[in-house]
Image (cartoon, rainbow, N blue to C red; front, top):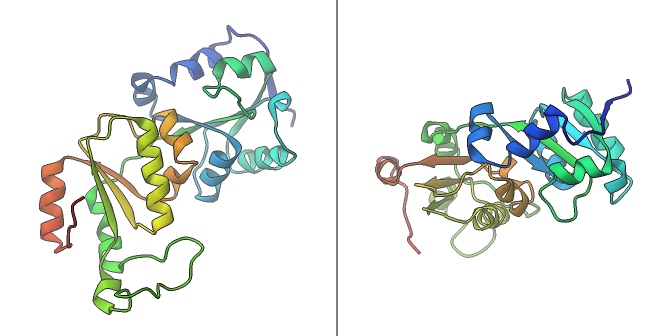
Length: 222
């Protein structure tokens, strides 16, 4: 089936995509923007069902985009082509790569981390069993590896923190009293899509402190 093609900057769907750069429209619609080949690929790999996928071949940087578009379509995304000018209007990157998706927001709570706390820590990505000193202790292996951050203001910083947490093998990231929105487009971009890989919980600092004590999780401050 040939996807719909939008060429007008005044199209209602184009206007809605531009609005989704702001938090209030995102929260009202319960969705957020995911721009970029790598970010969209990671979302699909984690089973995220994209609501919509917009593409513009004139912006493509490689040859793998058509396969990704088809993967998104088969997974349930509504696919639509945009002309080069229209895509430039909806993209938030200075040099877009021709792919922009709309994904559903989600909300995880501390209760969603119960399984992680019981299961214990995971092995960092692309690494074998931990062999460094201290990690051979079964007690340490059972302890969850959580990163707790507080009052992060800049979306880019939060995205970078998520990327670092994933590389370090963190089981989850807990964001306390955030100033920025975790679904800000710059969080998605700076995390290079890791937003979809690492469980992310947003909660008040007081509740997190009480939860950590209740679960007997050792806390290290920095």
